[in-house]
Length: 215
Image (cartoon, rainbow, N blue to C red; front, side):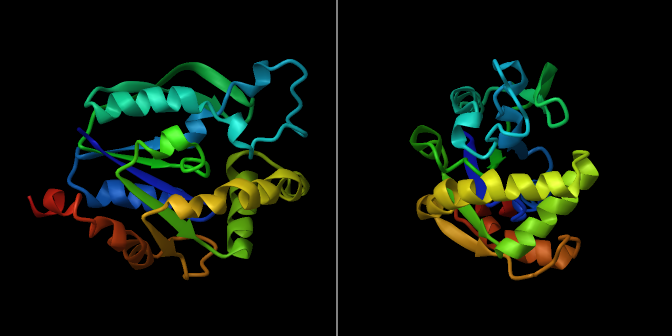
């Protein structure tokens, strides 16, 4: 059975950076990464869909049923094909992303500890605690550079759904975490390799992962 690790925290907390660091730190081929963002529902196909008002920060925007199905397959040692989601078109793209079976499956996302059936699948649960101002700045810069968003649209969405969703769903989910990692770097961009190593160290020291590192 594969080891499933959940990495959660608010938008811009550094979840992706931590998850990618864990994949890199483990022996080559031992770990794969699954992103919850791939499992957004095909919002663009919904009747009356309006990207300006749709709440992407509610757990209902995620297809957790499909995600649970895929993670059960990966946990059993079988490969899957994850959906491809477009943040430009707000819908699923044709095809998918092949995810091979591996000994460790690292899953990152803001809602991965918000659904009981999904939470129950994980062997290690991590919450990344990052100051809200740092998280907002990171999100603002990311959405402009990577998703073609204007600053005004990012701010409007943050106040309307991102912050309320974090307070209602993501923040309370920290109670399901095995441990909390505090990102005290105050870095707008987590580009210092040593800082990332320090964030990953508590996870890599988990008894389930030590045998892989010592092999």
